[in-house]
Image (cartoon, rainbow, N blue to C red):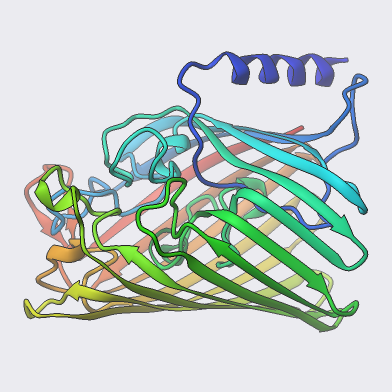
Length: 404
C-alpha cells in the first residue's frame, strides 16, 4: 500500500513539474532487463530509486585551467554538501513480442548535469548555470519480434562500464571515463539482434553525443556487440562515428556558438567482465576517442585524441556487506575533453583510486561510504580559495539509496 502511494505521488509530481524537458540518462532496458511488476492495478511496469549523498572534497571540485570552470567530478562536485541527487522513476511496458515503450524521469541535482543539447539551453555542461531539476532522461518506443528488438526515441549510450542509475554502479562517485570519455545519451533509432544465447549485435543511427536536438545535418552511427561465451565471462564492444559540433560541450556565449565548426568524432569502447568466484567480480573498461578539426595544444588545427583505462574489483563479503575498488588512468593529451576544450593550451594525464564500502540492511536500502584520491601531471584543480591551483585532490563521500 505504501509503495503504491509513493509511486502515484511520484507520477503526479513528475507530471506537475513545469517546463518539462527531454534530456539524458538511464540504462536502456533490453528484453532481459524488465522493471518491477505492475502495482496498484497500473497498466505498466515500474522501477525507481531515491539517491541522497554527502561529499567532502579537499578542493573546490572545479578545473582551474578551464575558462568556464567546469566541474571535474560528474555528480559529486560540491566541496562540502548534502544533495538530493536523484528521484528516479521508470515506467515501461516492454513485451517480448509486439509494441511497447519506456519513459524515465529524474528529479534532483543530477538532472542539470545529464541534460542533453537542445532541451532548454544551447550550452551543455556541468557548469552551464541552467540549474535544471527535472529531466526526462529516456523515452522511446519499443518493438520486439523473435530475436529482434527495435527502439526509437531517446536512450542511453552503449558505451561504458558505469551508468547514471546509481543502484547499478558499485561506487558513489562516477569514473573519469564515465564523465569525460563517453557520451551519456542519444536520440535516434537502435536495433539489437540476438544471434544466439551468447552473441548479439546492435546498430543505430543517432543525432550525436548528448544531442536531443540535431546540431547539424550529419548523423552518428553506433555499432555494438555483446559476447558471453561462458557463464563467468562477458565482453561488450562499442563503436561510434559521426560529425559533431566542436563547441556544443564547451560553448561560450560568443559568435562562435552561432555557427560552430564541426569535425568527425570517433569512439571505441570495450568492457570485459569476469566473475572470478561467486564473491569476486573483475571489470576492465577501455576507451579511445578522437575529435577532428579541433584546436590542439600547439595552436594548430588537427585531431584531438583521448584514451583511458578503468579497472574494478568488487567483492561480496556477505549478503549485507560489499567492498569495491576502482583505479583509473585517463590521457587527455590535447586537453579537449577535460582542460579547456577547443581552447586548450595544455593536456593532462589524470589518475584516480576509489575505495567503497557498501552496507545493505535490506534489499531496498543501500548505504555507501567512499574515499577517493585524484592526481594529475598538471595543476588542473582549483583549491577552495578559487585561486590556488593543485595537481591532486581527495574526497570522502556517503550515499544512501532507496530502491522501489
